[in-house]
Length: 580
Image 1 (cartoon, rainbow, N blue to C red):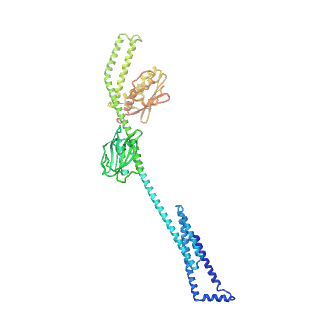
Image 2 (image 1 turned 180 degrees about the horizontal axis):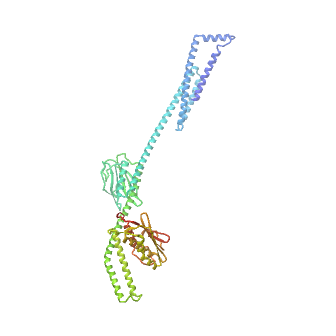
């Protein structure tokens, strides 16, 4: 268009230059050429010649004005075309080769025709060509605008579809997270299944969502929970045989496959008229299929999208994990209850046996004492050593051991029942502890052990049950003398604390493992291979100590390092009923 416009402008300007040259040169002819001047004057002064000249000049003026307007419009159009081309270049629009070829042929025909025309016809022809070119450019612009509008419409449609997909994906992710959080926080199987069907049914807007659990042999499925709309009949409690030939669905579910299908006939479980779309998904883990999840949509054109399909599968996986955890928890709880029951039976048996054995053991002990008097009167103990005295000592020791065992069992039973009241007495810990530990000084000396005392002289008076505290300290010192080898050191120490008093009993020559420390206060537990004096024991001493400390409102712990064991007891200065 630019080349054609320039060409037309050059032609018009050339005609105007020739006319201006002719006008300027004609009146100024010299008088020497009178014949030529007279002829020109006669020609220009004639009426017909004058009218024709005026008409030509008038037409040329109109043509020039129209041409100027056309050139301005062409310039504006050309600028608009260039701007449009710059905008649509990135959109892939390029003028076709056919358009360029057609424009070239038009220009060629116009040039051939232009050479045979006069000035007025040439001007009209130029104007017509400008108008034709403008129309062609306008047509091209309209075509480009239509293409752009179509492209924008297509892009808006794609953006709208993509936005809807993203919104649905976000909604599904939110639903999945909400369901996952709820089922993970629960260890109740019923609550898990109810949550799943309720959330899935409301989140996907289905007409029905139910879940069924398979029996151990995977022969029947029982519908446990459901979410239904008012027009859907209920099927809770319905037992479905997995061998029923319902489109072979159950066989595929047992293989862990998720299935979608349509059914026009009424379902054997829910008699619904009209076409129905089903989505069946198994609830399974690495140990097998636990149950299934069924979704239902009524209507001819209602199907489950791929996104809904994946959501149901993920929910089924989370449901399987939660159900397995809930069942493991229930199994563990059942085992705990069974163990507690067995432990209670054991305690009841031991209490019964202790009561039943206490009377005969008291009689046996009394008989041993009488036997000792008779043997001494008979002089059988005069010669040392002899078999009679050795056998009698064994009988006396074993009898005392059994009596101690029975007494420990009865004491533990009373402490568990918490029926004995505390007899509170205020004592001076420094004086009292030394008096209780004094008998063990001789025992430690006989076993080549050292018994040290590290008592805080500034300890305040303590209000406690003397019998309980005496039993605690005696058991700990007895335990220390039993497990400390010759040359070992036993230390009894006290220290004042912000909460009350701290009592420590430690002994060297032994170190407990982590497993021994965790079970040291269990009933009948004994540390194997660490009894150098072979005194034996019942395994109830430390268990009894822990119970007594708790009755006094204190705590006890054991530490072992550097070939040394330390028992640390924290006791309050005064025991209140709340601390018991």
